[in-house]
Image (cartoon, rainbow, N blue to C red; front, side):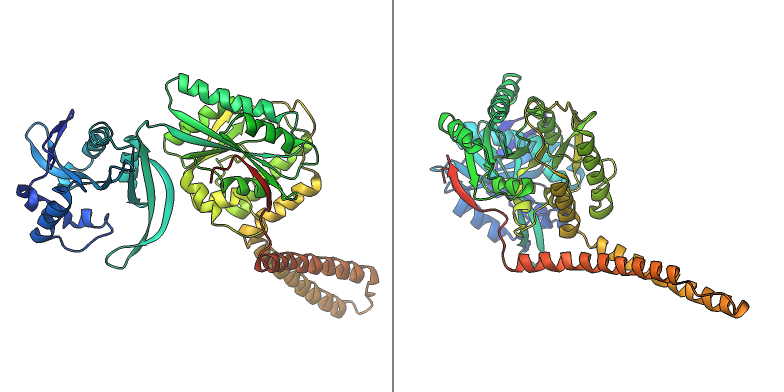
Length: 489
């Protein structure tokens, strides 16, 4: 049983004893504390003493009482449970039991002290914790202590039957964060080596500046007609941190991203293009914004070096996502972005044949921000996005995640019906007023052609939805992988 005290700036962690039973019972039965735990049954002296004998005294758990340093007043507890010395892992937990001690940073300081103790004294290499997603203060405190979100646990059942979402968070001994760079590749045999080299140099520069990042690079060849996968194969042979994925046919950029997401292992995922226009050397800006608390960070360009057609397409895409998908007006979306791992895990739950990553991000989180980066001119080749592909991408965006087009069609139908009714009344009144007025063939045909065209447009829109439903029901794949390079699993 542990006897060492841990002294911090404002608090002291002292090992728990049987004499602290009354405090634990009081704190854990506090309704404010109880609602943040999965186990919500009443604590009793007998159950806590059993915990000390079976867990603390056997070394399966380590627990401290948090005391304010100036007067040694007990205010809460921090602990490690399920300590596995073979794997070097344990689950971390903490609670501030005294209501008047909340909000003073004691929890964050206790976490920092406890984590250091776990790594230095207990010789653990990794700590995990689970926290309810609606407990924003605790999540922020854990992130300040160095924990990062690994995944989202959906609808975890509490002992009273309530189901709530939780974050699974972790921290490793070296406190380094693995960053996964996902790059969809198409006709990029000439540009890809420079992009990969720049990614590696960028991570090295960040580490030289005091950061602690490791990297992996996921290269997804979207059935490129040139020698792109041969280049990827060479890159993988020279660097085991690079994973190469070869798709069996061309599925599109968003499907290629989804394929890459299934192979990432990092705490943060950064997506960028293969043509060198998205500056990999500015990835540090995206990562810094993630560390400030954003779940997703998009690169924003002051001036895009695309053609007039592509810039118009980007503007139209922005307008579409605002109107159809509810994107905030002050957020700019692009193909260059960083996201926390739990966001990617939630995106992967989408298995239909028409992925649209922007829509999946917008439905997952609202903690989205922008950072300004420089957009480069394209050195080699032209964009793979033709007018037909852009139209297909926009259709995919609003038919996969919004029913607003159907509602707009309904509104147009109601408007035309109303105008037709009003025009009919006008025609009848006009005939009564002047019986000699000739009935116009041209106006009638114009009305028929216009209304017929609108009906066909609306039927086509409905057919688009039905067709996509049919294809999804037939389990059409998002992507098909022919070959994977450097996949350890």
